[in-house]
Length: 172
Image (tube, rainbow, N blue to C red; front, top):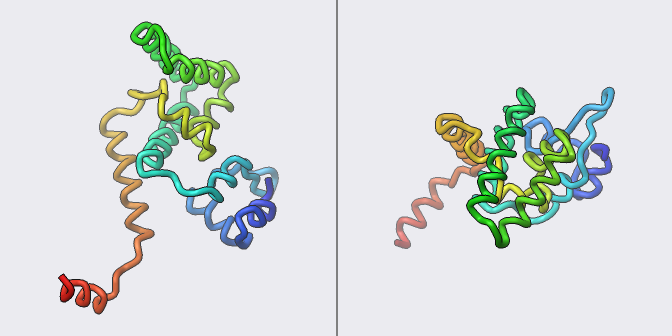
């Protein structure tokens, strides 16, 4: 969808949507000179926010998506190995449904995998909870991504006025 259509859906201005794109909070692709957004991402932004755990998963999986773009064959092979291993470890049960869903995503190709890894849509949030891409990031990469998430949250935090801090401290 276009920036204007997204602004209408989000009940915001076009400039606010452009700012979301520029800050990396709204994934987009360029079509000539225009930005195009996935409807699922816009709708996810209109719905209630992700939990802290879901947000961490999203950031980690976006980092995995970066590695996927660099070497899709290797990451697809690693995911296939993980799915086979999980099927052996859990020969029956609810986890098979999620493994089957991941297999369908993987079978649909790189674009479907990238969508599942980076989208804020509800189906992608649920899929990432049982990701076969765990272990792709090194511990250093994982820590770096989580530190960047923490920094981004601090950047958006509002400073508390000194008089309010004093009032709270007096009340305690």
